[in-house]
Length: 636
Image (tube, rainbow, N blue to C red; front, side, top):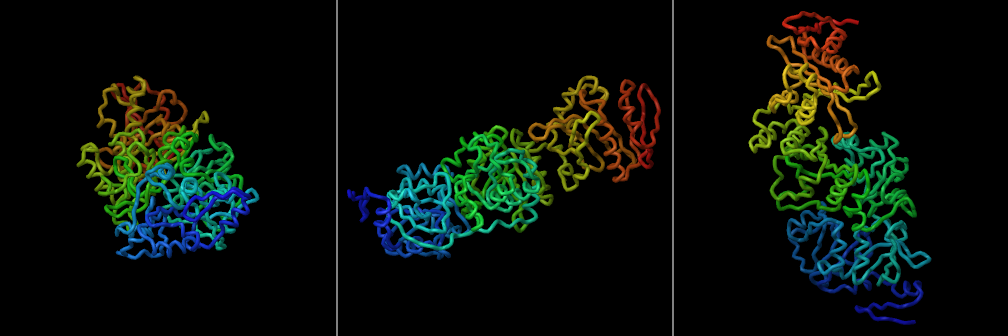
């Protein structure tokens, strides 16, 4: 048997893997004798706090100096504030709650870096690894251990570390993907047998459910999903389960209990993925024993390294990639921040930035950031004029397409700063909209002639939203207008034929200025009201085809009405449908009469008014029909 010395007391023997395994099997204390002062040690996320090698590591570092420990969470249950530890220093790429105080006190280090970039650091001189500590499933008949539920960064660590120390745990499920670790690559084996750490599914509160409602509407069938592991993600999964069908794919850094439930229900099938068709792809599993049992030997799931799963180019190759990222703050220009507040770091970049960028480049993809509209205590708005000083920007102004709160979804991609500010103020908590509006005007993000009542979407009459099927079977979405519709209204008005524009405005619509366009959307839903009809399932492709409006007249109980429909959609019953909705809304606001005029050359509008279901009073003056509708009565 040929034996080669590799240093620090270890030898590599070219022999049968079983002999190698037995020769390298030892106690945790003996395995960690390889550790030297000044070493950099990677501890796999798959190692629980009760892992034998982790317990021994806590003792071993006390006899050494300046040991750097790369771990995603604190290996000491309660780091001691002010502990003068020259023996070791923890280093994290993501700062969880258990490391936040240690980082703030200078007892631990944080490196802001995207997860997909870390493997390259391990492979280079920038962050070489001396020792990798991992927990694996026992070797199979071919002599390959298995990384189990944690592959992500662990894959790169075992590939590049000088020494690999592996704890063998029969509780670790064997998984598929880039999960194999040959016995020959491991320098010391420590046998253990204890339950894996479990993470309960996240709690879902009312705010998360309301956010999820808006997110779910943005997810098309056959999309590939990245949801994360939080209350919003779990609530989205609930809604997708209730929705049924969908035939979604899964590609994200985490495979969670929610992902498992979607697969079990046949909602996630991966049948239509552009890349990796037929399998869910992730870096690691986060959940309970129920999840670990599900992934054991499951050929429908592959776990791979972060540099592969979170590679923006690979994500972008997936058509209809929808990435939902839970964040902490968004400013009115569209910048997104995570949990960083001033000098106190928390959270990190992780893979979210990569998935947002990848989804943005995906054909039919949608990057979505989701957040509650306020801080947990309700004292401050998470939609801000500017991000907090020191806040860590995890996505720039050009990286996000949608921002979602419990108050709605704002499309910001391709929109001006003014349009973004309007859309984001509209989904802020109503209590904070006035100060955001005033701040935006002070900073000249919004025009001075825009009034705040138009942004009081707490008054938005959502009950008027309806899907109408017209005479020819065309399906149209009808809803009240809001300030975010200004660009769509402008496009609609300038697209009218000269004839249609003249019938509505009695002049050339091409000479309308911004204030004239703004009257259609700068409304309060009481004295001023606009109803629009749009086509298109996705917000990016929606097209406005009609608008109906009323304005309160002097005197109080009457309003002036007006309608205009795009030429190619006239004569299909759309104006009649919208008029009935406006009449019912006006009655609820206390109006008794609708008044208006119709040009002689517009007989189709006369027919619409005559069929309104209310008494009609007509007169004729100077070539114009004066039509009054009595809202106090109904006709069959």
